[in-house]
Length: 178
Image (tube, rainbow, N blue to C red; front, side, top):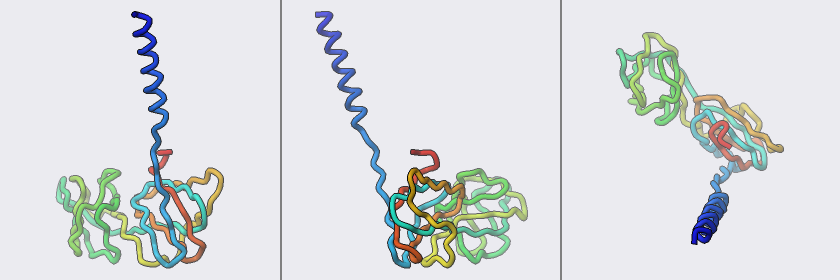
């Protein structure tokens, strides 16, 4: 009886190990069509694996000068920005912790932060902006290659277009996630 329990226990362990190996994570590719359409790949930092085709990768961002009154989620700019921050985009500057995002924007001088920060007067601030409707000058030509992963160490919004090429399929990942 003791041996039967041992054999049954070993069989259960082997079966559970086999089932664990059968699990997979599926990541679907993002299509970048051959048109003037721009695809929003989300906030950086991220890594792209180019599966096929050709496209142009660029960032969308802007900057300004601002401060908070003590520790606050309200950041006041000194001038209305020409390119507004997008909700959920990254924001950075001295006194702003990495990973902080734009929680709100009032179409004027006030940016709501995702967490309270202390930002000194006249601090240079940079933020991600929504991807534009057309790309004026692509920054990086993305072409497929064996093991070609393109890390983008930026907190700006990452955008892609293929109006100057054939289109592409890419897999976006967090840096080092695969």
